[in-house]
Image (cartoon, helix red, strand yellow):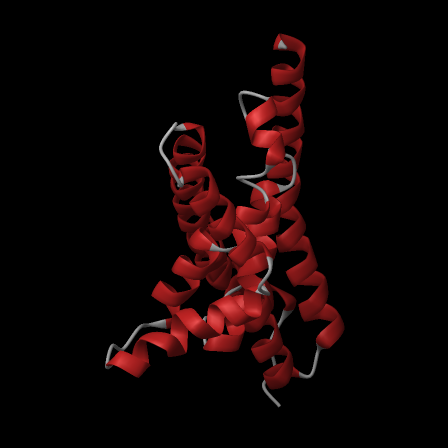
Length: 184
């Protein structure tokens, strides 16, 4: 057993949190760009555009994020490409998970899609990326728990950091949504 102080645990988790934040930002920006492109395609008066976007959204809404992560990570190997866990997780979160929040029927009714919880969901989605070897905050917590045998201390630190990441984003999203609702 390795003897870690609470500060050692927290410091190591802070280092892992940067990967959670980085992946979340990539997924948020990538998903926003994909969502914008799909929204513009949906609004375009081109033949088949509406059906193509609807099929894309249904495909990604109808498959679990875990399946999307596995396909993004192991799928390219079928054609001889080696994809890192970082790239696979970025692609899966950008193209898949965000579609549950970015493009939907609501996006056509209002000028700005609902944002409450969007980035929070992305942050939570990064935890699932550990199944393909991406080490982020939650996975780092598991590894530290296995080394220290201090699950309560480690999990409390993970929860505190997750809250510190999610609460300000969620509060800002609610405020932004309220300001848009007043404008309409």
